[in-house]
Image 1 (cartoon, chains in turn blue, yellow):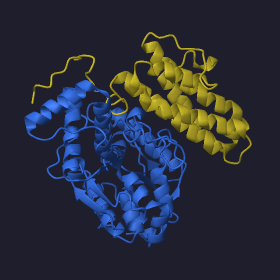
Image 2 (image 1 turned 180 degrees about the vertical axis):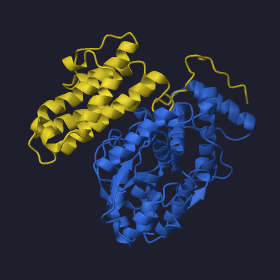
Image 3 (image 1 turned 30 degrees about the vertical axis):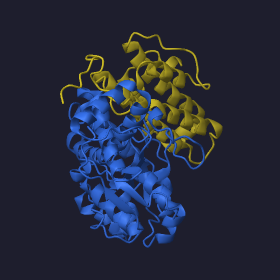
Length: 307
Length: 157
């Protein structure tokens, strides 16, 4: 263990208190099993998700700035956000505050009005749950702790869009060996491989799932997700591993809808990478929230001796 | 490529389905041609988007591929096209994979995966033609209604 990120501020965000609760449960359980400290941000607020930027983009920047300010006040220099949407918005706020005077002005003004210190770019680093495990434990550290290898489990890793787009808000990526790649992310692949999984070559790991339009144009979303699912199956995957509650929920919901609306049944299972890693470390399926998933993977997990 | 001249999104979907349903032997027997077809399907998809926006599709290439030039053309002023950048590059990758070793034992599977990527590109562009905001606030990190309401107030709080 490198010691880096041994203790981080934890920003679960709203989705992990709702539809993505299994992700919250498995992230906390995984951290505990690995001896990592998650200190939840006190009185955190919603990052604005997808909606607030439509009302006012600079207000959205302020919302994330407030969360970063809380971390700073708590004496923590790193915020870990498992949700791609939260992670993206924190990174976007960091970028805007560093590069846009108008964003700084609005954040300063709203912070004064709200009665707290205004966040200044560069004080806190935002990381994703993948960075957290990769840096704090690493592949070798994981290998040494595996009790139930994921050996034989074929996994397609789906990163979604907001983990790596737009590229300019992720300056630490694409920095060569050891860094994450925006065109072809690999951190989840690396971690699951360390736990014994067999990653399949999945050509749609950052492709659009239509998630933003899941209600306004459900058929487009269902068709896009169906193609993600059938491609994963064609690649030989038993499981699609996810690292975002929005992606995860979208895949699960549209898997059901594809069968109901288009009569297209797919059987690939959808699990959070934290659930897979947790089970590899010997945690039960219940402990990592598998019963909360919509798609029931219990038969597959039993067959593989997991959970 | 000539085959893209009169293709519709439905034609492209039908060709993807046909490639996916083709027997291994048929795909392997014409692997280089099918690899070129993958690129042509991607180009046809982007041409439809450009034509729908009154833009003449470029005949230039980027990194040796017209598909990537068309993507760059479509992405100009339209950062939500980030959402299909990797799909275009994956298509080029699968094309190259087949072209470099058309006799490879796995060539039929490689072509099918390429067809699935081509289909995803077609679905994305088809969806974006229906709802222009697809990919806008996630991949481009932009508000959906930025153009309609450029001067936003922050006084609501």
